[in-house]
Image (cartoon, rainbow, N blue to C red; front, top):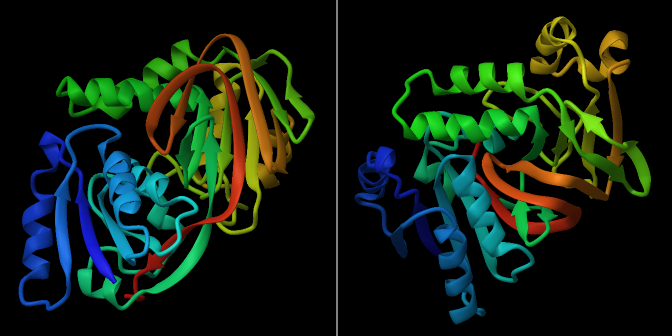
Length: 296
């Protein structure tokens, strides 16, 4: 197995490479390091290596946050002899929280890891492995990145406040496996392959990464006071078992979801924003080979 450490090259991630090199010092195995040049570069690079060396067994180690993991996963979808692994860096990496007890901070734990297969979500021509957000949640992610880039230390809180006050009404039709969940207006929707988004929100508590289904939860438009009552339940993953919450949402499990609107839809794909007026989202069964690190 040849290992390639794919490191997020963003300016605020400069501490990642020295830490990786510190852990690699003295270890005897074949590896390379690649530092990404921008959004989408990890997927481009992984695809390039996979195309050039289809018969060689590679493991691409995503070193960064959820976005880096998602980009690396997109490059290995349905590839033979190609694996991904994840090392946890950054403020949040929601995907790794699906595997409690695993040590995503150690190169040695990764080398002692076990391979398995997980599903992926195909979103038009993009891919996700954790959670897709539409509506208010997506706008939190979108403005959070803008405020972060502008240097605001409280960027997430600013983004959350803006989204709650301004973006609770979103014109999106949601259809899951032919069943219409929303014809016009929603507050937000989450499509979960994994369970957690936003660092702490257990948005898809029943999600399983290898069951061939995504968890679909569509929140109806609601008053601010109603949202404030539901939000703690949503954060703790109790919304699907609470009668009051269930009166304000629709839930199902599906293999295919279609989103459409006569306006642009901002969709957060594992934390990265893509924009269109129409999305087709499909579950790709066990399409990603992943190496899970040893337990702590």
